Length: 172
Image (cartoon, rainbow, N blue to C red; front, side):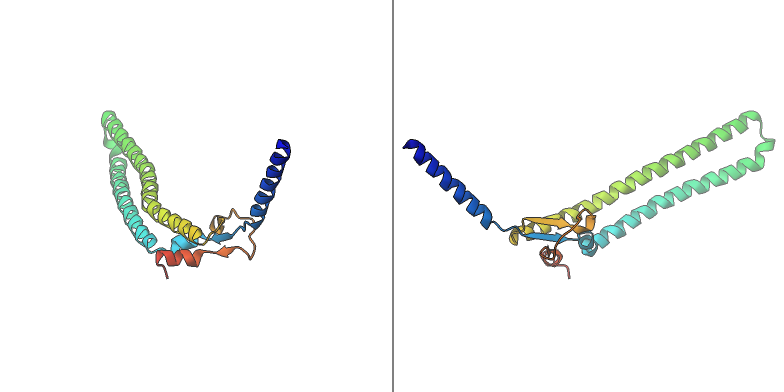
């Protein structure tokens, strides 16, 4: 008798669970995050700030290169009249300057990439938060980013949530 009650309870549980699973509707959405980010007003401000920073680095590099060229031309024009010691000293100085220029270029590239990340990270986070909020408010099971090129297929049943996210962020 106990086995029959347990078996009946098990059958009812399986039937109830499969009935609930059959009722579950999956809702899919998609968004082009690149398009969203390009339309966010904070993106333009970050772009301007990054360009300004890049120009500062470029100006410094240009000054270093101009100084190197001037000293190199001075060395070339006087090299024949210099003693070996002075010639070696000037060549060493030019080599060190060239090394500093190369080091500055490498460091500047890394610094510029870090600055870009620092400026864009809050914007990306704001977009992700808005996407999550829209997905939660509209009961989406999945939201795919078609801007990354990873999605191989999505049907017409998938809903483009870009307008909803733009509205959430106050973007026209």
